[in-house]
Length: 161
Image 1 (cartoon, rainbow, N blue to C red):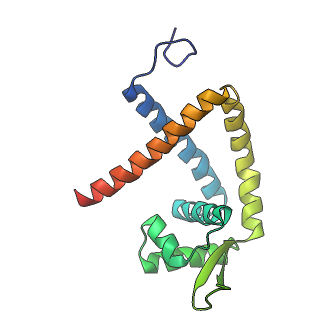
Image 2 (image 1 turned 135 degrees about the vertical axis):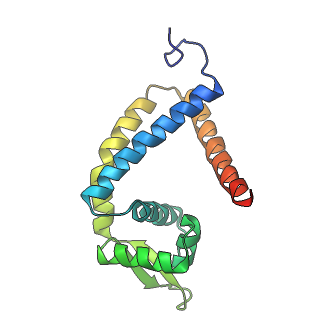
Image 3 (image 1 turned 180 degrees about the horizontal axis):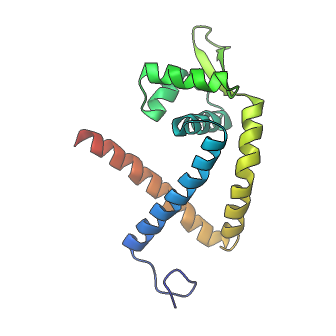
Protein backbone atom coordinates (compact mmCIF):
# COMPACT_ATOMS: atom_id res chain seq x y z
CA UNK A 1 0.00 0.00 0.00
CA UNK A 2 1.33 3.49 -0.88
CA UNK A 3 2.02 6.08 1.82
CA UNK A 4 -0.54 8.47 0.31
CA UNK A 5 -3.36 5.94 0.66
CA UNK A 6 -5.47 5.49 3.79
CA UNK A 7 -3.95 2.90 6.06
CA UNK A 8 -0.50 3.30 4.49
CA UNK A 9 2.67 4.18 6.31
CA UNK A 10 2.86 7.70 7.65
CA UNK A 11 4.43 10.12 5.20
CA UNK A 12 7.79 11.54 6.18
CA UNK A 13 8.19 15.29 6.69
CA UNK A 14 10.11 15.43 3.38
CA UNK A 15 7.26 13.66 1.55
CA UNK A 16 4.73 16.07 3.05
CA UNK A 17 6.83 19.09 2.12
CA UNK A 18 7.15 17.74 -1.42
CA UNK A 19 3.38 17.30 -1.62
CA UNK A 20 2.81 20.82 -0.30
CA UNK A 21 5.17 22.13 -2.97
CA UNK A 22 3.24 20.19 -5.63
CA UNK A 23 -0.05 21.58 -4.32
CA UNK A 24 1.41 25.07 -4.38
CA UNK A 25 2.48 24.62 -8.02
CA UNK A 26 -0.96 23.33 -9.02
CA UNK A 27 -2.71 26.21 -7.25
CA UNK A 28 -0.30 28.67 -8.89
CA UNK A 29 -1.11 27.18 -12.29
CA UNK A 30 -4.83 27.53 -11.60
CA UNK A 31 -4.44 31.15 -10.45
CA UNK A 32 -2.14 31.97 -13.37
CA UNK A 33 -4.87 30.89 -15.78
CA UNK A 34 -7.25 33.34 -14.12
CA UNK A 35 -4.64 36.09 -14.32
CA UNK A 36 -3.94 35.50 -18.01
CA UNK A 37 -7.65 35.28 -18.86
CA UNK A 38 -8.24 38.67 -17.24
CA UNK A 39 -5.04 40.50 -18.10
CA UNK A 40 -3.83 40.70 -14.51
CA UNK A 41 -0.40 40.36 -12.93
CA UNK A 42 0.13 37.77 -10.20
CA UNK A 43 0.78 40.61 -7.77
CA UNK A 44 -2.61 42.06 -8.73
CA UNK A 45 -4.27 38.82 -7.67
CA UNK A 46 -2.30 38.71 -4.45
CA UNK A 47 -3.49 42.26 -3.75
CA UNK A 48 -7.10 41.28 -4.35
CA UNK A 49 -6.72 38.44 -1.85
CA UNK A 50 -5.18 40.75 0.78
CA UNK A 51 -7.99 43.29 0.28
CA UNK A 52 -10.64 40.56 0.37
CA UNK A 53 -9.21 39.03 3.57
CA UNK A 54 -9.10 42.44 5.27
CA UNK A 55 -12.73 43.07 4.33
CA UNK A 56 -13.73 39.60 5.58
CA UNK A 57 -11.96 40.36 8.90
CA UNK A 58 -13.66 43.76 9.13
CA UNK A 59 -10.29 45.57 8.97
CA UNK A 60 -9.92 48.71 6.91
CA UNK A 61 -6.92 48.41 4.59
CA UNK A 62 -4.82 51.36 3.48
CA UNK A 63 -2.54 51.43 0.45
CA UNK A 64 0.46 51.48 2.81
CA UNK A 65 -0.74 48.36 4.62
CA UNK A 66 -1.34 46.64 1.28
CA UNK A 67 2.17 47.53 0.13
CA UNK A 68 3.63 46.20 3.37
CA UNK A 69 1.64 42.97 3.06
CA UNK A 70 2.95 42.47 -0.48
CA UNK A 71 6.46 43.80 0.26
CA UNK A 72 6.07 46.55 -2.35
CA UNK A 73 7.49 50.07 -2.43
CA UNK A 74 5.09 53.02 -2.36
CA UNK A 75 5.50 53.67 -6.13
CA UNK A 76 4.94 49.98 -6.93
CA UNK A 77 1.84 49.93 -4.70
CA UNK A 78 0.48 53.03 -6.46
CA UNK A 79 1.07 51.44 -9.88
CA UNK A 80 -0.64 48.26 -8.70
CA UNK A 81 -3.66 50.15 -7.36
CA UNK A 82 -3.87 52.24 -10.53
CA UNK A 83 -4.05 49.02 -12.62
CA UNK A 84 -6.69 47.49 -10.35
CA UNK A 85 -8.71 50.69 -10.24
CA UNK A 86 -8.57 51.16 -14.03
CA UNK A 87 -9.71 47.56 -14.47
CA UNK A 88 -12.67 48.29 -12.18
CA UNK A 89 -11.58 45.86 -9.47
CA UNK A 90 -10.65 48.21 -6.62
CA UNK A 91 -11.94 51.48 -5.26
CA UNK A 92 -10.02 53.93 -3.10
CA UNK A 93 -12.19 55.90 -0.68
CA UNK A 94 -11.62 58.27 2.21
CA UNK A 95 -11.93 56.70 5.64
CA UNK A 96 -15.15 57.55 7.42
CA UNK A 97 -13.28 57.80 10.74
CA UNK A 98 -10.24 59.75 9.51
CA UNK A 99 -10.72 61.66 6.26
CA UNK A 100 -6.93 61.91 5.82
CA UNK A 101 -6.69 58.15 5.27
CA UNK A 102 -7.50 56.28 2.09
CA UNK A 103 -9.02 52.80 2.37
CA UNK A 104 -9.32 50.10 -0.25
CA UNK A 105 -12.38 48.11 -1.21
CA UNK A 106 -13.09 45.56 -3.89
CA UNK A 107 -15.71 46.46 -6.46
CA UNK A 108 -18.71 44.16 -6.82
CA UNK A 109 -17.63 43.11 -10.32
CA UNK A 110 -14.25 41.93 -9.01
CA UNK A 111 -15.94 39.85 -6.33
CA UNK A 112 -18.36 38.35 -8.87
CA UNK A 113 -15.55 37.57 -11.32
CA UNK A 114 -13.42 35.90 -8.65
CA UNK A 115 -16.41 33.96 -7.34
CA UNK A 116 -17.26 32.68 -10.81
CA UNK A 117 -13.72 31.51 -11.46
CA UNK A 118 -12.76 30.17 -8.03
CA UNK A 119 -16.03 28.45 -7.07
CA UNK A 120 -15.18 25.26 -8.99
CA UNK A 121 -11.81 25.06 -7.20
CA UNK A 122 -13.51 25.62 -3.85
CA UNK A 123 -16.08 22.95 -4.67
CA UNK A 124 -13.37 20.39 -5.56
CA UNK A 125 -11.24 21.23 -2.51
CA UNK A 126 -14.30 21.06 -0.23
CA UNK A 127 -15.21 17.66 -1.64
CA UNK A 128 -11.70 16.39 -0.94
CA UNK A 129 -11.87 17.71 2.63
CA UNK A 130 -15.21 15.95 3.16
CA UNK A 131 -13.26 12.70 2.96
CA UNK A 132 -11.81 13.54 6.38
CA UNK A 133 -13.56 13.41 9.73
CA UNK A 134 -13.77 16.34 12.15
CA UNK A 135 -10.72 15.22 14.14
CA UNK A 136 -8.66 14.83 10.97
CA UNK A 137 -9.71 18.29 9.75
CA UNK A 138 -8.62 19.72 13.10
CA UNK A 139 -5.18 18.17 12.53
CA UNK A 140 -5.11 19.55 8.98
CA UNK A 141 -6.07 22.99 10.33
CA UNK A 142 -3.33 22.82 12.95
CA UNK A 143 -0.82 21.65 10.34
CA UNK A 144 -1.70 24.46 7.93
CA UNK A 145 -1.59 27.05 10.72
CA UNK A 146 1.87 25.84 11.79
CA UNK A 147 3.04 25.69 8.16
CA UNK A 148 1.93 29.26 7.50
CA UNK A 149 3.65 30.42 10.68
CA UNK A 150 6.84 28.55 9.67
CA UNK A 151 6.76 30.10 6.19
CA UNK A 152 6.38 33.59 7.65
CA UNK A 153 9.24 32.92 10.08
CA UNK A 154 11.47 31.59 7.28
CA UNK A 155 10.70 34.63 5.14
CA UNK A 156 11.71 36.90 8.03
CA UNK A 157 14.86 34.88 8.72
CA UNK A 158 15.92 34.91 5.06
CA UNK A 159 15.63 38.71 4.99
CA UNK A 160 18.21 38.86 7.77
CA UNK A 161 20.60 36.26 6.25
